[in-house]
Length: 147
Image (cartoon, rainbow, N blue to C red; front, top):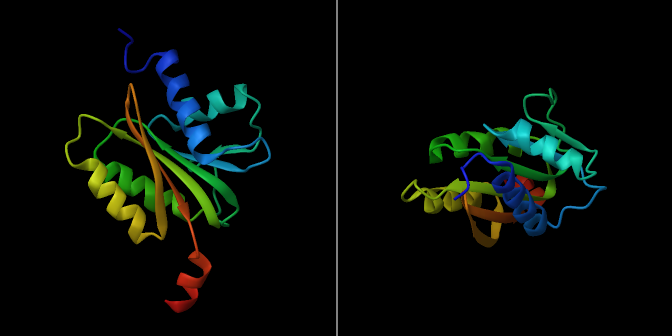
């Protein structure tokens, strides 16, 4: 059995997130979470050059087309990551969130938070580390104008 932090497991999570967000090499990507550095390095090794983390990006300019949140943590840590990363995402961004399968009820809370932030859940895929949810921000500019 693979250890939760093994390279193969990390690769599986990266593959799942890339597929769900339809990530291409031209997209600007921002990564958050406790394993953000490892995921960003994994993406760079695969040829994605426009990758940064929330820790390394100082000014939130809504310029990233894809956001990825990874790492083991409670739903509160994931929600904090969502709040932080949303400042960097474009009006039509895609996002993928890794939810630890051992956290009971976390997926419902994260789904609810994503919907509150203007994202529509597209898919959820189980992998060794948990559940990866993908969502797309739609009509977010219109929502901002109404608010």
